[in-house]
Image (cartoon, rainbow, N blue to C red):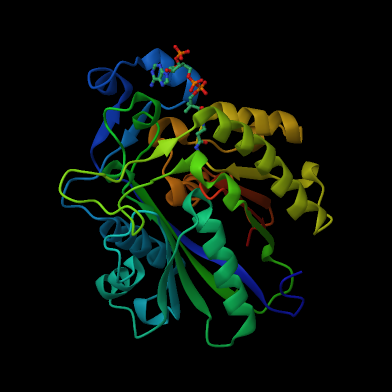
Length: 331
Ligand code: UT7
């Protein structure tokens, strides 16, 4: 257990933000050689949201965070730490977290970005939890996952451009004087030896972009990533459950990373889950990487799928390769 004391860390408020502009499968079929039928049957995605040119990752994160603060009933001055999980930070430096800090008018609290691709939000939750448990300083923490993936998508590559969308999701984590509620356990993992299955090879220090050469675009071996996703998500979910002694049958709601409907269906089959316990919002947002889980969690709460006392299991997988799972007793 991460916090055997009488203290726990709970999700006090959630927020989400989706850009207004939607891109449909039929519109994509006019841009590349694809069809609504192929995209729906191979991925489950119907639409995704695309940010305006001037709308930055920090802007989306700021909006999601404002809503999370409102839903938590807290003021910016109550926040003691801010972490942003993203692979599409506004600038190489400073961090998007510091830009969001300024936008929200937070105090001079620590602010940093964390990069673990689609697992980023759950990595950030684990880091925030560890800091909150270790130090009395951190009572209320903003954890945000936000991405403007449309800027790193190659819009001529049909194997990737149909998959991704822009969004942000945010959570306010708060310490409470109650034992064994909120975040109960978290497991993280990574395998750098498979990094090239899903990456943006250019635009970094190893291969900088110059003029129109080496544009930073997502490159993916979809089939291999798919196989790893199913195997690793099942394993990390089992690991987090076995560390806590909670049976999979006791879980009320599973929120998997929203990458592909077929990956989620395989996970359901391998874990022998009841499909109605698994929350999916992929069809309307696509794969939003670090924003995927907080966005789905926000929607699940809005739809009344999670209630106080429920066991909630979050499971993520992404580039790195990385993976993570978080078990929550909803408060
Ligand atoms: O968030 C991080 C993790 N990312 C993921 O989890 C993604 C994991 N991978 C996937 O979701 C799937 O592999 C994809 C959706 C990307 C692709 O589905 P697939 O069933 O693995 O298709 P494939 O790559 O094996 O391609 C099958 C065929 C190929 O044509 P040929 O070679 O059989 O003639 C592709 O060229 O489908 C073709 N294809 C398309 N056809 C129409 C690939 N993309 C498209 C497309 N429209 N958009």
